[in-house]
Image (tube, rainbow, N blue to C red):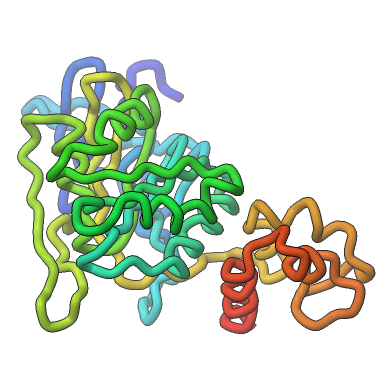
Length: 301
């Protein structure tokens, strides 16, 4: 890389790029040669490490995008490009759902978790709006995730429960809050980092689904160290490039069992001698998580 170039991290990627550098934030355009290799996945995204040149008017031009350490992607249905990279160079994703309004879907939580596993990212499950339900009941419901090693945060921006835990979880790391619209991702970030002016929305009374308030991803620098990406809500979350034969590995509690199956290419659905199905029957693996795995296998077929 040219030593005259200034390095930085992309905070926002929309009609322009905001890049944080040692000289402060710089608003940039990008050379086509820098964007072209990433175009099919949506181009430059928050979290990308870039090298820029400064222009006389105090703006900049992105000349190069550094290789990504990690990225979190989803499949976009019905679009010319199949992949949408949500953020790059993450350490972890915080998967946010609401306890109610909109209703929580555990099958959707599983989609995010399996994608994070495939991407090599640490996952944290955060259930917001805990003030709307019984925390004891919610904690019991979420034990399916805590029992297999995921950190679970029960939070409420109304009562303040869980906010300090979330702040500690985000500190010093590159994180992204992901999840559907209306679950309160922007509200959680504002509670963690008071003084931010992030748009927050509500839930449609007719559909029960959240309205989009964050329209493009933005990386926010935290006072306690680290960054967090506030990402647009996703009503659908499809897998991108997860091979069907690797889906079982993405369910972390399946791993102690799947290598002991009778057949090396066992799909863990109908084959005799399947140790995973035996583990489900013995109560060692969640029946609900296994049933969702089977549904996903059929979907991927």
